[in-house]
Image (cartoon, rainbow, N blue to C red; front, side, top):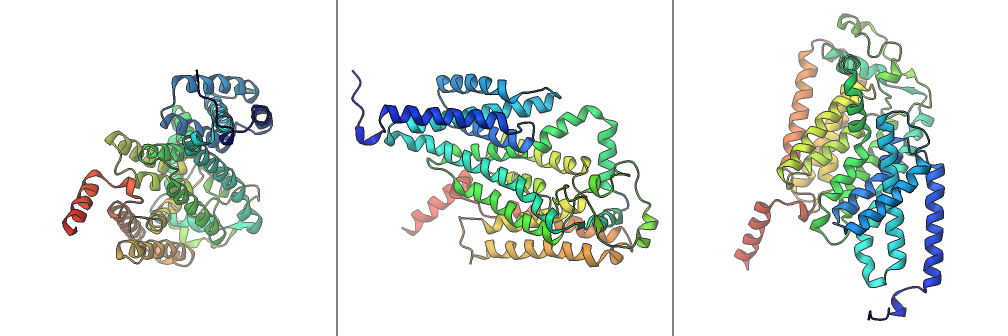
Length: 418
């Protein structure tokens, strides 16, 4: 016979039943009123399912979530527009079912058993709300800046001898079979964040808040710079020409550089490109994962670089500036080394200086860059190479990310001094 439940560790059954009923109602309201066709909604909520799977749940729990997800999908999938949108809606349905299951589990199980559930539920909820907040924060720069620096970034891209974003856009238009893949990889950045977190869950028995703080800090600082150097992307800055034709290099120097008006409904999502920044941070922090994880992260960051330009959401300048910006953010958030340590403050200083230098150069130095494509290419390659090489040489973000070799060396060092 099962032992009687400790009344001090759990709520009365009637109260727990009522709370669960309220949770089900809230889930129904969310399914009916949230637009799960939007990637940041569907994928954002769907990330919770990845965290649950990473915790190695029982088959019974998986079946419960799948059945609940199928029931929620009945309300969420209102019309099937295309395969990718259907995937987004189904992912969101599973994510909402996961959050509902975890909340009900916390309410029903004894207090002493809740820590394992909170280990999944808390980071899932925070990631979801962080992503929702990111969507609404994008509009703030639009309210503040009716005009953008799209013409400046357009000229910088042209100073390379051609327009990389236009070239990628034409390649995508000529290969329409790539469009679903581009949508999945570009819009799936929020799922990549959840997968990034899930990859390290087994290494700590409590929520790994440092990973969420890294992604959140990059978002918040990036949003601040959206108001310093607001850019919308060639798809919105030059809708009549993207991706059809490049502007002749010989005519760039004759352009009257000025801010151009863009509809306030269009998000100011640069500079830097946060999509690329997040992909870089994920890539740089997979050093201690198995080879397949590192290869996947590398492929994802390359796909994101192409996607951001091919969709017309970003210029190549946004990506070039994002590299030192990401280096600065990565070094700022390291927890294995004190900030006074040169291994940490120096990359913060250099990464931040290179990022600000790129903004200043694009704003005031374009006449110099237009002297020859050699100069912008040299600066871009040098800045990018320094950022990438330095990022991979940084100390691990948290102890759980240290490689086995590094961990063993640390243990030997401690033993030697004992």
